[in-house]
Image (cartoon, rainbow, N blue to C red):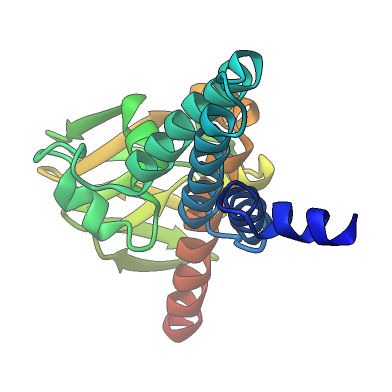
Length: 225
């Protein structure tokens, strides 16, 4: 009895099952989504092979069920790869992506779907101290004139304006004006919050981006004072 059990376990069919189970067990040890899905898919593929050869006739119900799982695994893997790929970022937006250092490509693409790129013809007020702005800006070209705590200073490009209203719906802590000819990416604040509320992964990515920018500006403001 024990000999027969061991023989079945060590048969090529048994080895396939053990290998499939091992791969899928290893998969859950990965936090990285692509590695996790690759190992799950490899294990699913071995299970499919087993269901084809384990009996005299293929085990069609098991093959169908496992095949459906395999299809969803492939779809999830492709989505995970696409989310991390920069290949689908347009040439127009890629320089902006490079300036938003550290943001995932998938989150950036979603962020830019609701964005508008604007060139300011005149000096334009972007935020007023004590007021929650209607828009959030990312300045990609040109300097800003800032008044904070009765101190006037200039802000360099590659900075967000109004992002504090997204993090905690806080009013602006400074009055900011763009200069004529400045260029910015502009988001409707309410629309952006609506999208963030529907996608936790996107929300976390955007909040991390804004928090990093806020920390950098606080450090710069401390030097000015």
